[in-house]
Amino acid sequence: MTDRGESWGPPYDAVVADATRRGDLVIAAQGVEGDAAYAATNHRILDDAIALGAERREDVSAVLVWDGQSRGAGDLTEAFGSAARDRNLPVVEIRTLL
Image (cartoon, rainbow, N blue to C red):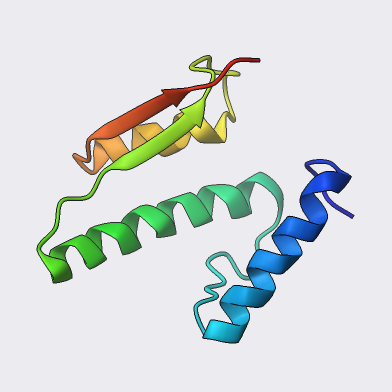
């Protein structure tokens, strides 16, 4: 079962299998479910990106791919952008059409 539509299942499974095979799969929010898991993962992505950027002495940016419209409280894409800005990261927004 997928929460983003059945067409997302096979590509998701393939990416997870490939990351697992390479030893690159990170379980960021173990024991957390739903929106809390997505939020915890977003924070982990930002923290890991900042650490990797510092290690490599490279700049880090966050990228939001969305329609630019907040859905209000609980909008995880908006929260990702806010968390990135809170960490003083530049945020690149790629706008999509609905």
